[in-house]
Length: 269
Length: 326
Image (cartoon, rainbow over all chains, first blue to last red; front, side, top):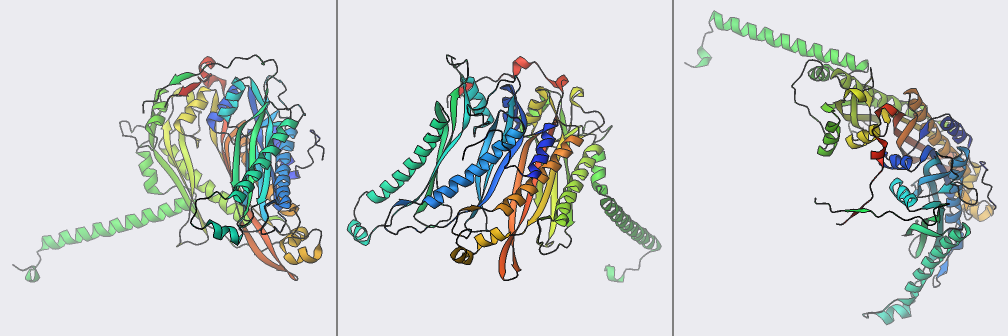
């Protein structure tokens, strides 16, 4: 699906009404005081809190007991639901005329009110550069970044800017050990090669997908990558590897920028 | 002599009567005070004892020691600018929630619940404000709003707001009002020095009921999945009805909080916290057992206004990058 950077079709009516309020001069933000002051110091004006969310029903897939394999239905679900939430958030930012979104938090809520159901929420503060320098990603999309206000400020000092959050996900079924193997291992120090290989594969797949997204965004690199390993209630042997980070590019005209040396402090407490 | 056989003299009897009278007068006074306090509570105000304690700190009560839950660092940040804590102030309200329908067939705001949350919080904050005004405060810092629950009052809400009332230096005062603010001392000082004035707290709660739509019901049931094929529970799908309902509830809470911020004359709302909790209602519709959703959003943030007169030298505001050696 090609993305139109000016589209706002995913934003519901209630959201549109609230954003109208933001356009009339009041901004909202979930940044702390320190983060807010630093973002301002960096030359950006917060415009409003932007949110995208999706309540998603995750389908079902049967795994072979003795086979390590990617659960592609589940991988796809985790991917698509996050994309939906992120895209809606970007569309809200678009509606505010923002350059980008800082301090994005991407969370997955699981509730007792629905098995196989999860709420994906992306939330951050839309910002615009006061000097009017366009800080959008090369694709024309508002940039997104999960860096804190402090990290964002520091990144800009290094002559780089964020282009977007990139992510990779892989839900993997790790094969059960055969009884022959279990018995053969009794009392021995041995590596479990099939488990090692399965987890290795899954992690590599997630990271590769994240890197592919960064390449597509023409990024120079990815900072602040987190790799999480989680089971979202799929029972044992099925886990998700999720990699997420902020892709960055050099700021225009700052390619030969020298990063200032920090002062050193020794905290005596 | 044993007091048992003691015949009381006239003086003793008289003294007894005086004491009795004094006791009954005291009982009457305390009953009167209790009645008056109750009446004040009903008017949304604070009880007598609180008012008297606060007046003790008010005008003309100089030299009284202050009490404060500000940490030493907060206190010193404030003291550097000439601010001084007065006392801790609080406000609370326990609120009984009325009847509500057990289920709805269309997405609806559960006004009984929303209103209870908002009214209860408003009462608690107003009482905090009254205490602060009585002790002559210019601002209340580090206000936190906690939600209480008691097993002897099931189904009742309680909000408790606690903060530290402070006198501010002349330049930082907002003439004629007492500013409530959920920031700590350092944050308050930092904002002021950057030319931003905290002007109050904005908070709102909305509770929405979202019934399961046809698509949601199909996804919830295994039968739909086996026989329904496409659209059933085996398929990945977004639950459009729930997503929409949750969006509406959240947007409503945020829009109300923003409107409050505008009313306070602010042009920003920072440190916004969005709290969410959901619960299900099992409802039987025709042949289907469905699980509907009731979702509650609490939104709260600090309202700020640009005020360049407060700003100190902007050159000082550039952060110094440091590398910690330990």
